[in-house]
Length: 298
Image 1 (cartoon, rainbow, N blue to C red):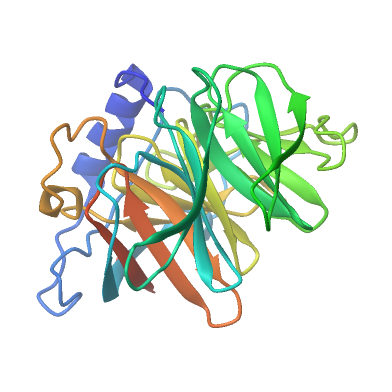
Image 2 (image 1 turned 180 degrees about the horizontal axis):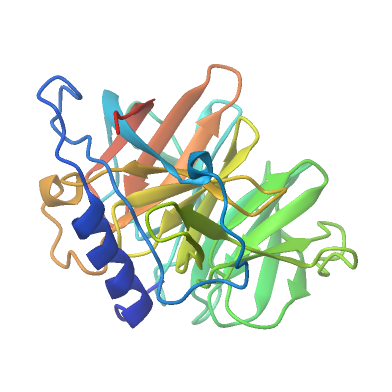
C-alpha cells in the first residue's frame, strides 16, 4: 500500500532507535542483526503490570540464500505453494497475481486485476487463492491452478495483509488490529471478530498497541507481520494478541538501491512448512532472501 508515513509509525521508529542495541561483530555474517524496542503512540487498555518476561524478545537474522526478485513487482502478498512463490502486487494498473520460480525469479503464470483495482495481501484456502484489494472492498477468489477468477466477497475498510490460520483467515488493515474471518463467507467471526495486537515493555510498565500491521504469514504457531515503513517483523501470539518478539532487518533496505525508500519497503513473508524455509523481500526489491532468525542477547 502507499499511505504516507504516519505519526504512529514515526513514534514507533523513534522508540526503536532509542531502544536498539548495536549488534556484536559475530551476530550475523551480513552485519544486519540489530535489536529493537518498539512502542506505539498510546498505552493500550491493559493497565495491570505484566512480568518482565512478557516483553518482546529481540531477534537478528542471517541470509542463507539470495534469489532474484522482479524490480517491477510492488510486493503486497507472498506465500509458498507447491514448489513456487505466489505473489500479489499492487499499484493501480500494476496489480497482479503471479506464480514465480524461486531460483530464477521467472514468472510462470500471472493474471492482472481488472480496471483500477489496487491489489493487496494473499492467502490460500483449500484450492483457492484469496486476494485483497486496498480500498476497493473486494476480496477476489482465484482458482489456484488456472488463476481464473471464481467469485468475490465484499468487506468494509481497507485490505492489507491476509493469511490462513487453521480454519480461519487473519486479515490486517494497517491498524493495530487483526480481523478474524470465515474463509467460506469472508464474514467476521461472531465470537471473536478482532484482536488488538499489543506489546509489553517492562521498562515503562505498560502495554502498547502496535500499529501499521501489514503483510502476514503463519509460522510455527505464530503470526508474523511486517510493520509498514519499518525494517521490523513482529511475531504475534494469536490467542493473546501479544507480540512475543521482533526481528530487526535494519540495513537491508539500504542494500536494495530502490528509488523511494519511504515506499519501497520491506514487505513479503513466505514460509515453506515442509522444509522450514522462510523467505522475505520488499516492494520493487531486486532480491528475495531465504533467512534464519536467532535471538539476540539482552
